[in-house]
Image (cartoon, rainbow, N blue to C red; front, side, top):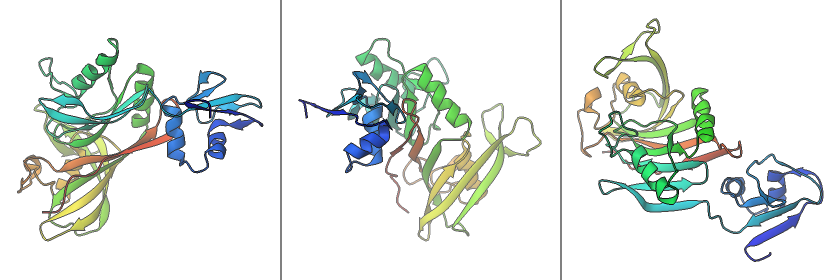
Length: 295
């Protein structure tokens, strides 16, 4: 140990992540990858983020005890005094928890209280040239984990993963009633009409987009069920339409047939997001606790 750093000389050719595993055997793989994503690992005085970086004999690896590039906070961001939890930040990505009833991004120039605009304001506090790039969106009524990029290269890399359906997305929903089956998959073709309403359509409609939704029941009582949902596609209102098609609309979703709204919100929350980090090409997962219980 040298001050706030650990310095280790490499004694044989090896990739960086296995080298870290050898020297930090009690640390989990996620913790070791976080060392890389947060800029804590230098090789020969150069910061390295790639887990598969090839080390050579006599290279000097330096690991800092703490990173100045990683931040975690619960009160840095707000919209109309509504707190937005900042889950994770490094030099490439920003992970936040979107509250319900907040737009992900403006659909009109007059809309200023959006998650995106507040993330931009937050980043500009540290760097006047800072910017938050939209990678994906959550519906206005949906709460939960949302990923933004801090530079264009990260944005392009992450959006490509979404386009190729490589991102693992989990949601939890509170639905009315009890589905007949414990699990299943809903495949639909959805269209958006001129009034921005989402409707089911047929495969033959050139404007329709495929929506694939996997679901399973986690718990139920006589009135409602907690559903775990994994989506392959990311269509607007996709999960809400899938639950409607099962005859068990999401609690609070009166647009799609719900009869109850005890929480004055649609009970849908994005709980987990897993993707390849743009710096390391390694999988990272971020999670949020689902806020619902059965009625």
